Length: 283
Image 1 (cartoon, one colour):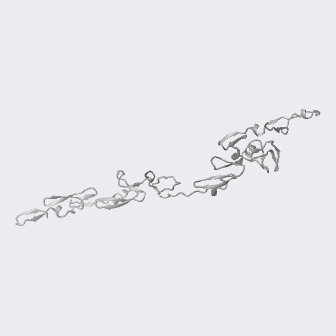
Image 2 (cartoon, one colour):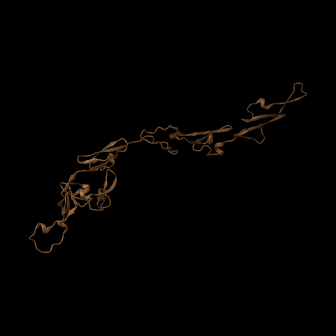
Image 3 (cartoon, helix red, strand yellow):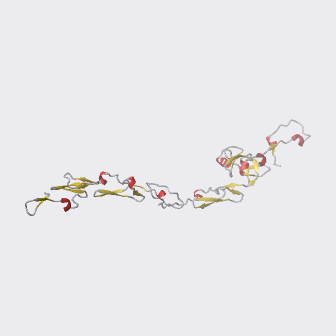
């Protein structure tokens, strides 16, 4: 084996197995020797025990995680990774399938109204659907009319209401009589100046409007929404800051009534009662 008889039948010549069969080493390098040969195996192959051939290494079986999230396909002397959409093999990062950041690569197909956020796990959700804020809350604009827009909404305010710069809230600017007393459904002791509901109910008023309605009880949710948490103060919708109510401007400054001057024939001892103070209008 490994030699052939010369025509004169007196000599034996070496057989070069490497030349006779180019694939004798199954992908490895064949080196001829006298009477034989040996195979030098490259990466992905290993020698047989007698060095007569190279055996394929099945990387997919020996290293199940070699492709990461991809599918491993074995080849003679090598392997390849088949990647899902959104993943690719990057030579600098090894043979595994790794995530493609479509946001930085600008290969995403996100909706115009969406921000691209790369998600290695879930590649779906490319389209944005508008949320109808007006349908999700019927009180979105309070007394105003809510109009849905793409990605937002705006309010249309009725007469007497002011639209805030945000376009998303109507503030009651109507001026009506403010009453200092509300008992058994009846309003009494009207102030001389007409006030907005906010100024009236957040200062001394107990009821307001025409027809008059009771002010929300101090400390209640409606009161805090209207006035804030401190008596005598209100939340200015234009500045979004808490401000003190100016009683001089609202007409809630009280002055004493001189009973002696109004009735010089009156005798006896007089004491001061809160009901003897009347609101003095600003001059």
